[in-house]
Structures are given as C-alpha cells and as structure tokens.
Length: 209
Image (tube, rainbow, N blue to C red; front, side):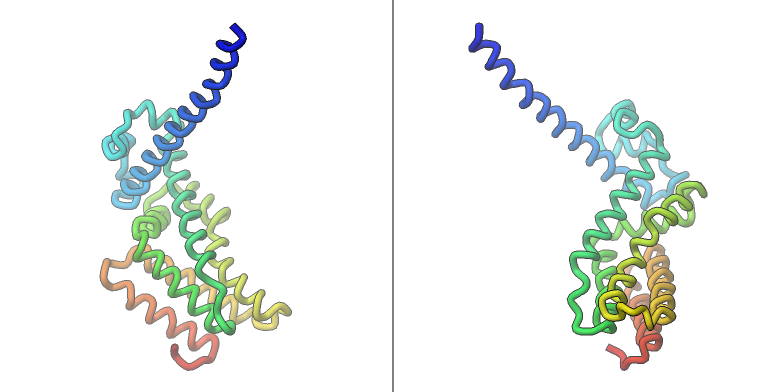
C-alpha cells in the first residue's frame, strides 16, 4: 500500500505539468491566431469565430483563456509589444558614440519590422481601428517603452541631460517613423528609413551615414 501511495503521488506533478504545457500551448496558438487576424482585419473586423478557425480550437476554449474579445486583443498586443522590445533591446546600445547608437535604433526597428511584420501592423491597427480605451491604455502603459530606447542612449552618452532638446526631437522622429512603418506598403519601408535618418542626421548635426 505504501508503494502504491508513493507511486500515485509521484505521477500527480507529471499530470499537472502536462496540463500546464497543454494550456500554454493552447494559449500560444490562440495568441498567434489573434495577432494574425487582428493585424489583417483590425479590431472591429475580427471575430472570435475567425480566430477559432485559425487556431483550430473551439470558441469556448478561447473564452477559457481570454474572457472577452477585448482582453484577447489586449494580450495579443502586449505579447507583440514585448516581443518587439526584447528584439530591440537585445540588438541596440553597441555604438561607439551617441549618433551611432541612435542610428542603430532606427535600423533595428526596421529589422524587426521586416522580420516580424504582423506585430507592427497590429500596432497600426490599434491606432486606427481599436476602441479608444484600448488605444489610450496602450499609449499610456507601453508606448513610452519604444521611445525609452532613445532615452537609454542619451542617458549613456549624455548623463547630465545637456542635450534634452535633441533627445525630444529624436523621439518625435522615432514615433512618426514607427507609425509610418505600421501602415507602409510592403517594399517601400526603406523609404521611411531613409527619410527618418535624414531627420536624425539633421538633428544631431552629423554627416549622413
């Protein structure tokens, strides 16, 4: 009897782990489908039924993980945002001076855009088609992280904040650049980068790189 009890006790964690993995897998499938649907059709043009068809899970399963369409959109957006920021933060900050670091930021956002196009389109759809409360929530809670990359570069090279006006101008340029990338037609993104870097070069008073 003791051996049976021990054996039963040992299998419970395995069963719980298996359920957790299955739940995580289902959640990721739902999020992947939601990101695709929302990025293509916008918030109002996407239904839970469409997401259900894309991920191969029934609608009750989707509501089990995300209790509403709004909450699913929020999670799809946040997960895309976090993926973007992980990409950007891991590939910036290795420049030899402020200008090189700033230019690297713009190039890295372009790299992300081309590698994971749907994420930035989701941002564009949030701005143009999502309910105001979701747009405002994202802008307040997560938007600053994008321009925060520039803040980090200036803090590195200008700890006394003597070039604050330049930093503000660069951040405005970055914001406009990201908005344009989120709606730019495929194949024309490099025009956006060229235009943005012209502004950066002018603001920092450097020769084009």
